[in-house]
Image (cartoon, rainbow, N blue to C red; front, side):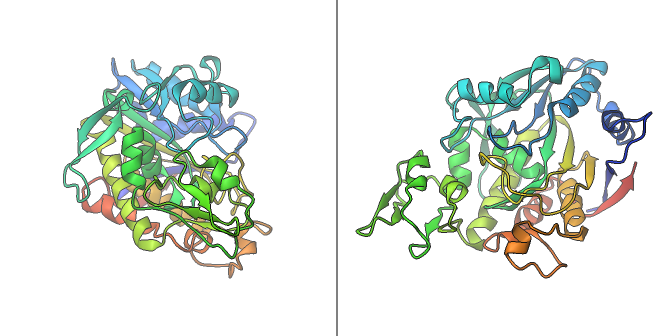
Length: 370
């Protein structure tokens, strides 16, 4: 497959060009205004951030994208689907309140908010997965499935299940309905290291599936017949006792996410933005964000979601590690790839490999600096 263009800009500004104006220029030079959005219902797919987590994409950036969509005659709306785990985005009521709490108002973004899969995560359309290995149809939240165009706006960061969370994670997992998320997660059942477990009970309280009990010593035990694989226990465990499944499960989950990503974009005009800023080691689904593992790098844009993710991974791996982050805690040698070091049980390249195989995009790219 031939290489795709990935445009990017660093975060340097001048009195005459703020970072928002720079984003506008990046989008125009990357071809965003040539998408042909006139009259199209355009889903701006984003992660609103779990309240308490401060590393999500800031609403004024969304405002720039929304304005350009409207200038092209499009009808933008901001959207995400409900979470599988229990939290403040588990249903549409709480989800919308959380989005507003984090600043995603109409005034800030220039568009309204729609929860993609309805009140309780059951509103979906089965979309075809051309060339799928794991599924022939994907359960995509209706607001995304029925949109005429999709623009993904992603905060690039680490992820405890897939190594990193980028555009494919935002599209594939983020567009899936609750039943779709169960399918994506079902191979990823976590485990408890009983020697590390302190019997604090945090994982038990957080488990929406009521799959975690205790043994005779009060240590946590997971019933995998009930476990949905959402890994919320991994997110809340402060002692390293809850662990995501090992590499093969991470690989299959990454491949399924790639297939759901392809389904979410089927038949639609699309474009993708990735903010490589506040690169925290874990997902924005956590109610906190740990210190960034590298300094802020910039904003990347492409019509190819696979090339975009690859470019962002490469940029993070090439950047110096920040001292005092989880990389320091885990004895990072100072060079080499970072996400596999942070989350040693994951296979972050699997999703990109599979996405390329099924024709979603190319891992080869030409980086164009704006």
